[in-house]
Length: 212
Image (tube, rainbow, N blue to C red; front, side, top):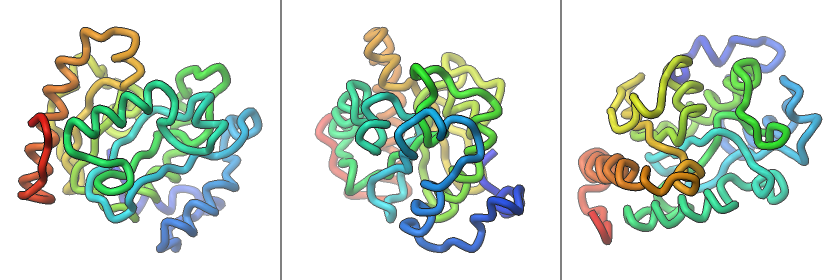
């Protein structure tokens, strides 16, 4: 389920509903200690890109490089994501906004627990409320389970559009999965071509992509 007005008031001790600017939200979220992850990482990785973009990419959580630099998707998987975006005609700071389901690095890059995802959900919901995406791409199983379905399976659900609260959502494989298994690239490229088609339909009919 994407954000709802009710979700913004789910915890009166962490009320983000009155924040109207992304910069103010970032400063607030950087103080978050709603779960134990903050104690074991360097800092909160809020997200980056164009806040006015109508296309959002959501991953799992920061890795070691992201935690060190305070930016999402800057390691090997992030470099591959940038290449994937470029193949679609998208640039990180122009066409998209990139964030993660959880904002702090789990120890050893493990998968965030259900409790950790739930604790960070208010932060994600507040970001989405301000971003107002038209299209959202979920990268990997954790993002799928955090945003759409706790029991979702990326191998089954990828490549299928889901509409929630007026947002079209496409789950696909995480770039890290492509590094481990290059055979997944074909399916991922098919998913991203669908994203380009919808982007032209809903955001920019003149969008130019070098490969699709």
